Image (tube, rainbow, N blue to C red):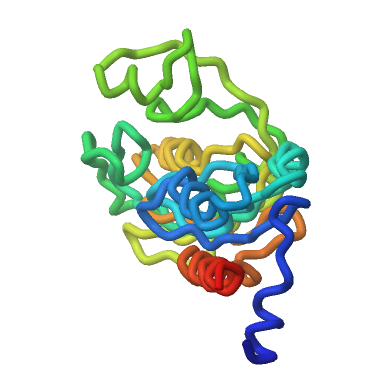
Length: 240
């Protein structure tokens, strides 16, 4: 193992506890990532958990904890998050993202750049937000997305969240790029939906990437298979 690899991969102690920063790939579930890492360290029989779910259609920073560090998951989960991504303006979907097909179209020909920037202001600070109908929140012991897929509607209560930063970084109608810094429990899909309503039009989330969580950045993360292959190589050396 050369010096570069030593720097990239420290001496792990998964049983005592590690905090692993993973760049979750698009289409993977958070559980898929946990499963890959758990299987790679299976001989150690240690716990592995994540600190904050990312939807399959989102990529970016996923914090994993192993061993004794799993006791700190709630602490990491509560940290402020940063996201970048794009909204598609002029249409809506039932899931507020690309998981479902477009169900409505809107005329956005008269919406100006100034209106788009101005619309962000009403979302800054502590606000009430309704989770998307297609979310993993449980009501009556069942996930909301399971009810939504059956066509059932459920009355939801808004949640209090905080958005500290909401900036538009690029406008290429119908795609609008953004950066958001927000509290735990914020649904960026709901923000996309509400942002469209604020412009008297529709919008849905067309891409999303978590870039930071607390002091952790995706820039310092591992690719899933990069880490898995390294762990497997260590296992082979131990077994020889």
